[in-house]
Image (cartoon, rainbow, N blue to C red):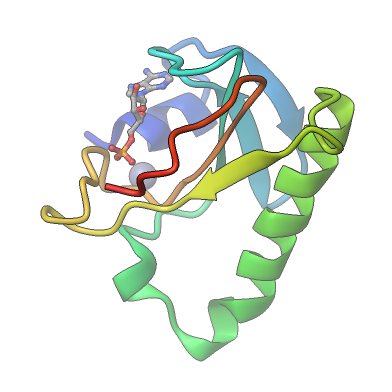
Amino acid sequence: MDCIFCQIVAGKIPADIVYQDEEVIAFGDIHPIAPTHLLIIPQRHIPSLAHLSEEDLPLIGHLVNIANHLAKREGISESGYRLVVNCGGQGGQLVPHLHIHLIGGRRLSDELG
Ligand code: AMP
Ligand code: ZN
């Protein structure tokens, strides 16, 4: 098991876990780019968006729902925030375990990339 996020799920490497349920965990990004920068991930290893199947669609809804819930808890629901999912090499994905970035707490760039 050399996936860093699977190791976080398994408790083998530490993370600042801010939310956990049977399917999902969320933790602080180790290199935050904004006052709020959390990662919301499925506990199950799914490499990327490109590996989702029809059966995974409810899970994606759940991940986005948790992201919205955490945005409220962080107090950035009204001011605004961004959810980002990088997919694949050219999409800027560095960790090959599906994750949603929740970024907010400052005015974000108008550019997407
Ligand atoms: P991506 O480029 O979308 O794959 O983003 C991967 C993110 O994971 C980056 O923002 C990293 O800072 C973050 N990251 C990598 N290792 C860890 C870790 N051990 N704990 C928390 N965040 C991490
Ligand atoms: Zn994994």
